[in-house]
Image (cartoon, rainbow over all chains, first blue to last red; front, side, top):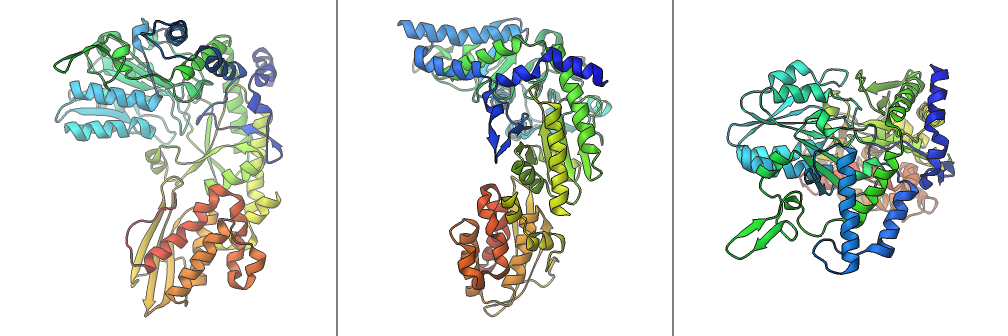
Length: 415
Length: 150
């Protein structure tokens, strides 16, 4: 195993990759930054930072409808990102790529628009017990509005969705199933293809929260065959404030608009407004142009990586880090699914997660502590909070060792 | 490491491990819940009054070392004091953790509270240290809503 690992690291060239991310060379509290909070947000490569600056320096203008040079230029840059995303996730058409603020807005858009059209009294919406609040609350709101019932597929002690239960909860009343591709709190990778087929076999459409998946793997919309998929730029090395909602064109065409305003209309009179075609129907108002352009640069950066190598490297790093921290007998891992992405959610016996976080921070190690916007997951495991170290492809074994040493320090402080 | 030592002083580690007045109070005059939803620190502060004096004060709940030790030290400090004195202590403690007071100049006044002087260097932890104090203040003011220092 070690020999293979070295070979993979060499192939991925993590040393050089790290040079692409300027923030990784900074110090925190006089120690080299060990950034292990990637599930919250990822760091940005220089090419993304440059694209943002260049946009404002040379290209800034409002998109669409402008007859002047810069407006055309900005429109082109904005729309170019849309087609990059379409290719990156293998969507059938650019019309299926809607720019939103982030995953949360993507879920809200579908919950509201789909809910208005398809969810009624006595209907059911099925989610899983692994969800981030952003894939719970929008559905709770719509269920309350429409008199529908929110059903939750339970998870087992390893933090895996119990597929038999999930299947049982797909009933004739289920209007939509919505679940995470990868759990942010535990790192569990859901068997999404299987879960999608089970729902489709009953004619139930599926929305997938892909916020935690895209940073770790390539995702192919036509292969997955999900109906909606949403993700955030900032977790995949792009700027904050931009996300993508993918939806099958046919289904998106049946949905009412989410917000009204400029850009989403074809013509407006006080008597009657006709809406624009996809994807603009769902993009009201001036969009976040600069960050969309920056997101395009992030996609270009990711395109240059071989994700089979990235995945292998991350899996090896996860195994190494898991071993490094669980060799400490006072560490208990929360979330031990067979299929996991680079997340280690853990508690240190007798020490609250916030104290763990503060002590690790004093060593320059950034982890997240708390409920990770997944309070039902914490409740399921009967813990108030966990510390969560989450990895990206630029993290190293040395950083996993630093984490293990940091936890040792927690033991020392608390005796 | 020195800042870290200043945060996790012996008094704090001791009160975290062996919290004083850590019990529910059946005959409390007032009980106030203190909850920080973002970090999950969650306590109930019980107060029994005799006239204007805090006859007894106790707490239950769970949270980080800073919040628990703070609740423990608060209860030990406030017990037997008048409401006015308790509110004065609240003000002093608040200034201390906000870095507006320098421990060494207020040693007599602060007593065990001085152990929390390191908190001001950790802005993210101020709310942990303040939670029980805000709950206590609310209990004395006979407010029954849940207190949050988020």
